Image 1 (tube, rainbow, N blue to C red):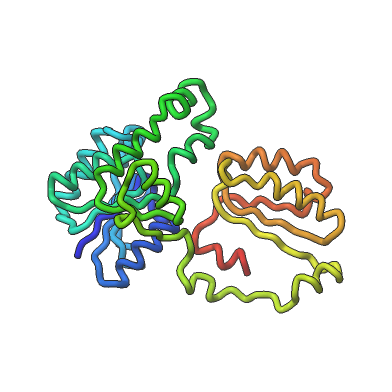
Image 2 (cartoon, rainbow, N blue to C red; image 1 turned 90 degrees about the vertical axis):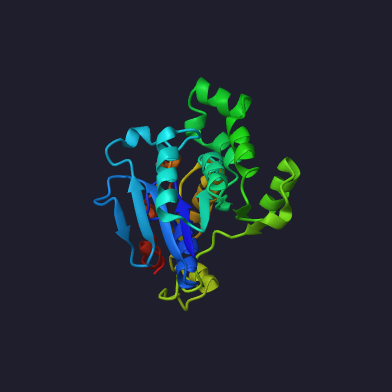
Length: 286
């Protein structure tokens, strides 16, 4: 069975895609990822995990914005479908959902949406959609994201979500059949941290004996999952305990967090290490 996974950005890496595609490869499926070109050296490669990656837009990346009705995306998806003849298509999120689902119906191929986020809610929080009056009007007043989601999911044969609450939301908002929705959580594979060596010294001992207690955070630094309250709490607790904080990742809130902590008493114990690769996470935890 041949499966095509369509992703709007660069690949690798993206941890949810890796988990899903690796699981499919391990079960004997032939898996292809169609991704946007992001300056990689090649337009096609087979990764170590057996996943085939096809990229497009090398010479016209500024025209390959993954938005509904983009004719370049539609043409590319159509071409890939005709060449691969996949048995199943998985489309990531809502932006390219409607055009992909329509092509799936045209060629009689089932299409499943991998809904990694409550996208309309996230877009209302992200700064890039609140930075000017036009984007605010489109997202908050015209509810373009909500309309896009509705038009996309109504054509999909199934949906993968990240939590049970999403099942309830899609059922209540769009009357989408719960039986066609399943939960795939944003959790790593069971053996992902198998090489991590954990400290044998317990937390209570560290706190009572002034041994540094290290906190780590990795992920996108975006508004819908704010670290502001945590950083303020860290500053207060640092006045009593020996603490250290390592923040890995980038995002639109990074500069705000750096500005927030620059006047902290604990600023020397807070470290921003920036962008990282998926394979770096066990090493960072170690």
